[in-house]
Image (tube, rainbow, N blue to C red; front, side):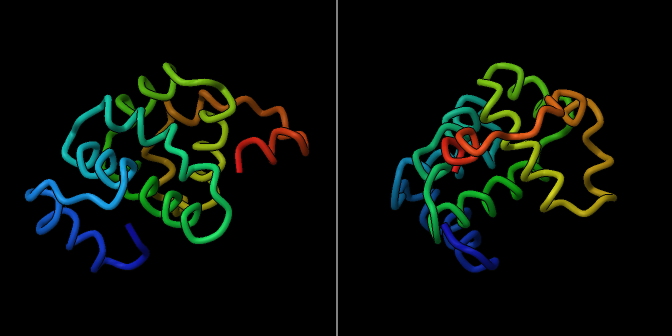
Length: 127
């Protein structure tokens, strides 16, 4: 995908309906955007999540779009089904990238966070 709105418009309204995806992560984002919870789980475990540089930044941007697309209960339930390292990483992205007024929409999801700080080894694993 990409940063800015043009790549999202291209995927959601042009390429996606024609089943033309650049990667599995691209496809999972598209399906998750339209409500496929299994695709959202796959997206959370995408290889792009661990990338450094542009791919990792795009994954974070895509995650923010999906977080804003889903409600608190759904995000909470999906995060309950994944490992704690990924769950804490998603929380970290939420608190650093969402505006405080948006963050308040996710009280159940925020309650999942393990307040233990990331060790240096964990930071390397999740990035």
